[in-house]
Each structure stands twice: as structure tokens, then as C-alpha cells.
Length: 390
Length: 169
Image (cartoon, rainbow over all chains, first blue to last red; front, side):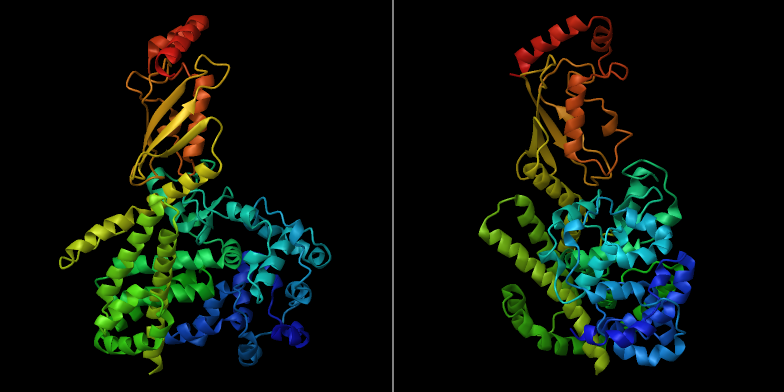
């Protein structure tokens, strides 16, 4: 592993991992400069396309802290080093799991209370000392898991308690893996969307324990939990994102540029986790608006480029019959068609799934439909990429 | 989710409506799978036919109650905004019970004000099973039965087991 070799020189300048342990406000302020290093290449390119300058990248980096795509940090570090005042005890936490990526105490894992991750945050500070020595500490386990899955191996294959984790980390409302989990003051976590609709439709009480929940807090994403989920269940998260992207297309069909942006936005979210600070959220909103208007202006050019993007991607989907038929009959698929196709596929998927006949053909159809959706989302993104490169 | 207002694509609104209920459909499907894997004791439930939003459930009368030996059928109808709104549950088997009226309607707090989106059909069936063992005479749907239950439990049991024999076997 390349990261391992570079480890020694990493340690002294490692960004303040420990700051997450101190109080949350401080974390957000000083975490900025250091964390910019951990951008994934994908996120960086997307951010560059969106016209983000260095400073806003730094702000955005607040939320990238634990994302798995770390490979790029070395390159970025040299640039940012001067701006990053070295802080105390930085490398500690990261170092411990890095050193022994194999000896992860998988058997001890017992995350009976996944929700507690959030609650524990305040208490983390004093535990730092213990963390290196003691494996029983829950957070260490959490972190080690995160680190281990950040490596090359997918976590789903080697965690024996994955079923239990899946149960723990699923949202009681949609019964799916929590997507952008949001934690109530009483400590229960749900998908942000689910919690919001529950508050809208059933009153502002926790669906699990009926305690009153206040508006402001119910809308923030529990970053630690969300990153953990992304690391543990990448496939499920991807699937949900693909669905979300196609849903976005459906609602935004009026302005096709928006749909592309949505897909791209999903991509950047993937890299950045979810934004938790209001400031970066605001910034994103502003930027989104700018991009939107730009998108609508460039509509004509847009279509031209689309063709190029399609051609470059077509071979990826050689096996997907339906797409190919459509593509060969029409060289330049429009956004409307894409949206329509996405909807149709989604619908078919549901029909097949709900019919409950587990025969071979239906399951393969579902998986191909899923693959199609995913391909469409990525095509939208790639199309963006090519457009900006030219 | 907003429904598209594009006049040019008439057929697309149909799709949109299908996808907008899909979150409830997804959840119901998930519950169905989970019920199949791990059903609650003495209960079972599943879609009536092709319609995922219309289920039939059966609950066996628990031993130690006058309903023992009876098999009770229930109709469950899911609203389109399930799980944010409770499902409608109706007894299709007649039962002598102070919380179930002659039309099979059920007075259960869980199905009204204290519904929560975190509740599932499994939990609902368990709650229904628990009113077999412990009827709630203070929130009755049939006051006469509730009065009998409070005043003369033996008579109540006798009548209930008679009804069980007559309707639920």
C-alpha cells in the first residue's frame, strides 16, 4: 500500500485529527485548513468545475474528514502546508489504525447502540489517550473500522456482524440503511428526509420515543454516523444516490441543466459527505443558483457535448440492451428522454420487486435496471466533465 | 415530491405518481420480506393479491383466553403516505370483544393518535394479539361488552368462547 510507505513523514504534519475530539465549534474552525488535504480527485475536479476557489474548498473540507477516498492528500499537502500551522498531537488517532490495518478487532465489534456515536462526541477528548492502547473503546472500534474500509478491501466481505450492523444503522421509518442520518435530541437517528416528513406529517415528535424534537436540530446530518454508513455500506448508499439522482431528474425535467447538476451534485456529495455547517450549506446554495443559471444559458452547447460524452461512455454499457437500442436509434438523446427512461426503469424495477416472484429473470431485470440507473447518473456527470474539459 | 406540470408529456405524470408512492411501496415491501423471514408468534400477514397496499392478516386466539382456538382474519389497508399515516385495520372475523364492533372496526390507540412511523405491521399484530389477552374496557367500542367484562368476567368469557366457536373456527 502506498499510503503505508509514506506514513513516517506523514505523522508530524498530519492534520488535526484529534480536533474532532475537542468541542464541536472549535473543530469546525480549525479543521478546515488541515482537512482540505483529504479531497478525493473526483471531488476536486467536480469542485473545480463548479468554480470553487481554494477558500470555499477549505470550508467544504469540513465535511470530508472521514471519507474513504484519501489517495490524493499527499499531492495537495505540499501546496497547503504553508497555510497549515502544525497542531498538537495530530497524527495520533490516524496513526494507530494505519499501523495495523490487519489486526482490527473484528470479533469484538458490538455496536448495539449505533446512535451513541453521536452522543459520545463530547466525551471523546479524554479517551484519546486510551484509544491507542485499548481496543475495547467503542470509538476506537468505530474509527478503526472506518480506516480499514478506507483501504483497498471492501468491508462487506470481512465483517461477520454486518447483518447486525445493517439492522442498527437502518432507519426505522423507511427500514433502509440510513441515508444522510439525522439524530434527534433524544438520540435516535433516521434518514434526514424521513425525519423531516415525519415531522411534517406526524408532528414534531421522535418516531421512536415520542419526545419532542426541535426544528433546527432535526435537519442536520450526523456526520460521523453518515460517514460510517458510507464506509460500511457503499453499495446501498450508491443505489440510493442513483435513485435520488433520477428522482431529481424527474422533478427538474423543466430545466434539464438542473438535472445534470443534480447528478453531479450527488457525485460531489459522495466525496464530501454531507454538509453540516450552515455556512457551507449557504455557500452551496448560492453556488447552486449560479450554476443553474449558467446551465440554462449553455443549453445549446450542452447538447453538442452530450453526444461526445455518450460516445465515450457507450462501450461501458455494451451489455445493457435497452440503452443501446435507444442510443443506436437516436444519436443525441435528450434530457427529457433520459428522465422518462429513468422513470420507466424505476417503475419496472418496483413492479418486479413488489410482485414478489423470485424467479431468475425478474431479479436479473431488476439488477440491470439498477445498473442502468447508475450508468445514467454517471453519464450525466461524465458529460459534465467532458464539457468542462473542452 | 412535486408532480411535473409539463403539458407535453401526458404519460409522464402517470410515472411520477407511481414513483411518488414508491417510498411507501418500498417500505411495505420491506416489511413483507421481514415478516416472511421472522413472523411474530401466532400471526401471519401478506398482500391479498397483486396490490401491495391491501393485506390480509391472521391472528390466532392466544391460549388462556376465551379466544383460544379461533383464527381471526384482518384486512389491512395501507394509505399512500404510509408509514406517516397509520394503516386501516378491520376484523373480517366476528369477535366478541369490547374493543371490536360488529363491523370489525378496532379501537386501538396505536392506530389513531399514537401511531408512529417507526411502528410496523409486526408490532401492530403483536398489539392486536395483546388486546385478546387484555381487553381495554375503559376505551370501549362496544360499551355493553365492556360493562359485562368489568362486572361479570365469567359471563364475558363464556360468551366470547361461544362466539369463537361459532365464528372463528
